[in-house]
Length: 187
Image (cartoon, rainbow, N blue to C red; front, side, top):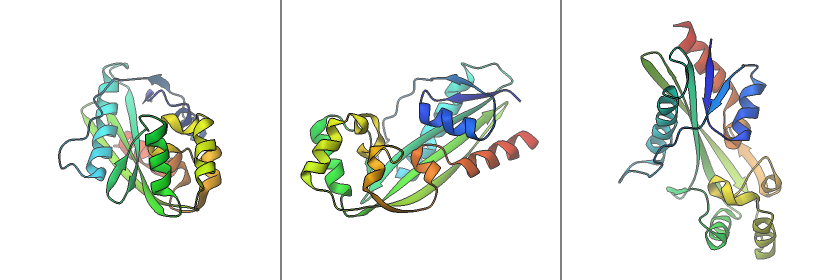
């Protein structure tokens, strides 16, 4: 099986490698603008599918292409990557001392078909002081992370608990990804 990962994320690449697959990497460019009235679940699933399908054009025709997207949802609102420091600190304030959802969708596109799965994980943050948030922002870590934090890095210091898949919060749910690949390639 020829497998391509449609992501330049080093975290997703490391997680997929953990599953033991050999794969190539492509980075399709898609429009990630949410559609009006699109639910967070529909949005993240669409992003994963569009990445996988756009990746097919960049890989060999008989390849299977894996696309994935991760979002943070607080009070029904998408928290994407922070636009700037003020946005990043506002996100951290919104998460401080509360729970939120991290949703990761994975899609696998192969010859003539595409299927996706969605994993939702509850993440509970401890209360954060303004100093902690500012110090964290200054590390540079939250600038390119959905929700303004990375659980696998320094941001993990703020996570009191999770209910669900740790690897999905990082960016690729291991069990569900393996199951999707096994199911699709066996058909």
